[in-house]
Image (cartoon, rainbow, N blue to C red; front, side, top):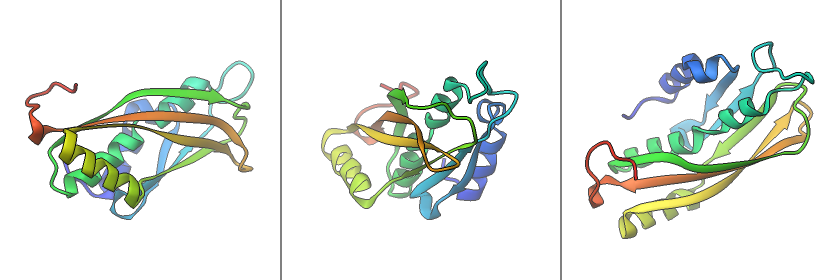
Length: 161
């Protein structure tokens, strides 16, 4: 479903898996070319040593490449299925303050996905993310592998693989 940046921003801010872990979309960039995300430290996501629980950081990174590619490709006329195929995280230092990250889809990234979808019917690629604290220090790095299937190339129904 194609939605506006503001509509999706509000929907995700109220989405329970993000809301209760204090993960907030600060802003979707114009045309869904990126997103700014904040993870607030709170009683609900603090671990025994006072830093943000690693699972919260991991969960925060989960949906955004898929959401951005989904919205961008639908606007290009694609009927697609998009999901996070795999992810890995490297914790570098405890997140003792709010954490921030930005995901951006460049023209090259989008064009590569479009070309591959038109040629092969599916696109799979991993993209890096850096999660930073309030001082700009990197607390974790994440690799998210996005899976995109062009439904016009043969997949029908609810199956995602």
